[in-house]
Image 1 (spheres, rainbow, N blue to C red):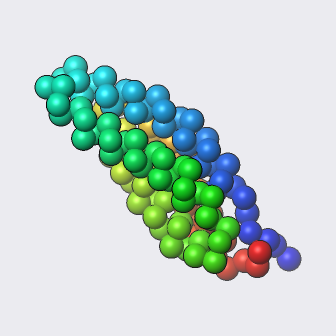
Image 2: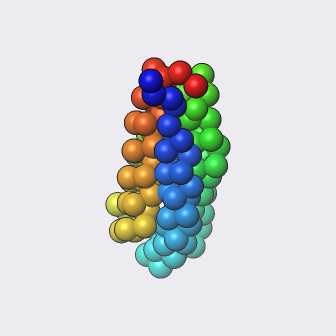
Length: 114
């Protein structure tokens, strides 16, 4: 008899910690390669994705809507992956992998009892 896993919460926290350097990298890389105003949207997107996936969604991975939460975490992982590829951020790539694994586990939590 299995219960819902807490792994998405821990992966979300790890992804959050890895996402902080990715936010800084996106900001610096965008500011260095283009006008400073173009770094603002990338930084905000990376910041929102990191906070949304890590601090909001991952804590709801054991709720009754864990399949929806898992799908949203995977969307955040894809967004983080794209931003990491654009800015060549290995920390962002690691954060995206953590989010993706946590999202898949959260979807699997939907079939398990609390």
